[in-house]
Image (cartoon, rainbow, N blue to C red; front, top):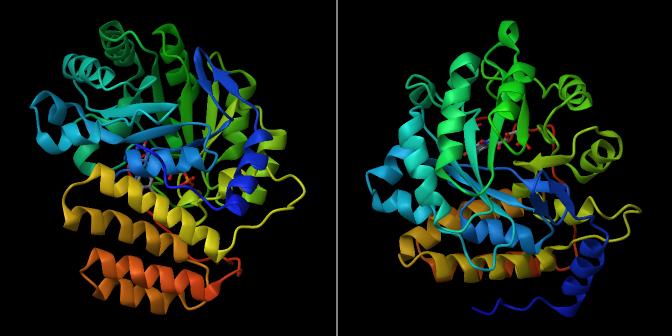
Length: 359
Ligand SMILES: Cc1cc2nc3c(=O)[nH]c(=O)nc-3n(C[C@H](O)[C@H](O)[C@H](O)COP(=O)(O)O)c2cc1C
């Protein structure tokens, strides 16, 4: 399917900044830059991932997908596995606690065409950890080897993991986990710099991430609290990690991957650029979801985040949420963005934004 074309002005900015990105390899997995989109539940489906690749993400990871949902042939879960042929560098993330069930699910996920299979070892959510999945896997480094090896043996593409620093302050053990992962044939590791106990409070511990990176037997991807382009640039310039992952930043600033490549802050992205990318996202969402209600829910939440930081965004949000009609929401969004014309946004980063998640 042909992508909706961007204006020459926007496409030129994208091309120039993408040309400044440096392709990398983490183990055997190639990415078009060291800045990757982190997995996010109910957000990182293929339409959003593809848009982020269009806008300079070096690679992406799916939302977390239940191994049991896959193995029980749950229809909704299988839809989550979809990889679009236009996506270049995508991994599928699975969660679960049972090695055999994970291995079976990984084999099925591999059939959908991702470049790698990622295991969620960072989800702090009670429902997941009480069963032994997500960050509960950090509590048992001894059992981890068999868990990872069983999954690895079932697939022929690389296996990767995404972890936290540890279960809690007294059990910070990412170094031990990474060693086991290395010995079990894992290709690379992404780390969110908080413990499970911290959930999303406090700050990501970058001192610890950098210490780990200095002596890491595997390529390490650092993650946590890089929400603004200048923070990403600064971290990129000094980090010992091979790559960085961004989750919440791109929701309010989908141009963050490009802005991070704009060393001298030469380019800016205006409200009319936001309207263009919203139209392309709308195209992808319409291709990805047949049901009108589903399309509305998907696009509306992203539009609301995209508008954050523009003038009168709260008022616009009120209108967008009272409408139950997809065409009307798109019309309102067009009117809103085009009324702002060439204005750029200012996000208030002191306000709390999305303080819960699955990793
Ligand atoms: C809404 C939301 C959903 C998330 N879902 C997942 C997930 O499915 N898998 C995962 O490994 N991490 C998940 N995370 C964690 C992020 O990938 C990332 O580690 C965390 O948000 C810290 O990065 P950030 O400060 O750039 O947002 C989620 C985070 C948020 C905010």
